[in-house]
Length: 79
Image (cartoon, rainbow, N blue to C red; front, side):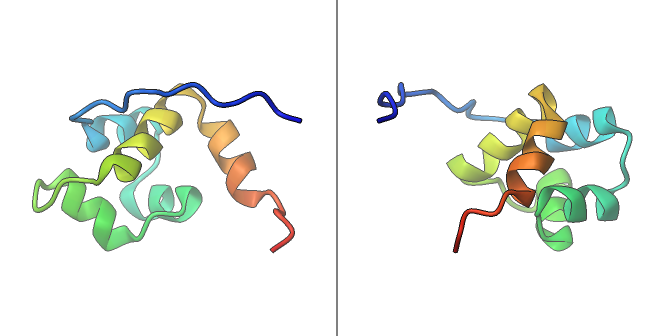
């Protein structure tokens, strides 16, 4: 049995464009690699809308360990 997860705070604001640029990827490639709709990524970066709490969590994870995010998204969860 896995231990319970600890509660975590997600930052209220994430500079999505800065995280993407840090990966060295363009918008289209970044969106495809990290499972984000291109239009959504563009909207976030251009300030047309703000990501939800879950939306803000993804750039934080990408910033910390982009390879882990890619591995997790490719994982077969048996669905």
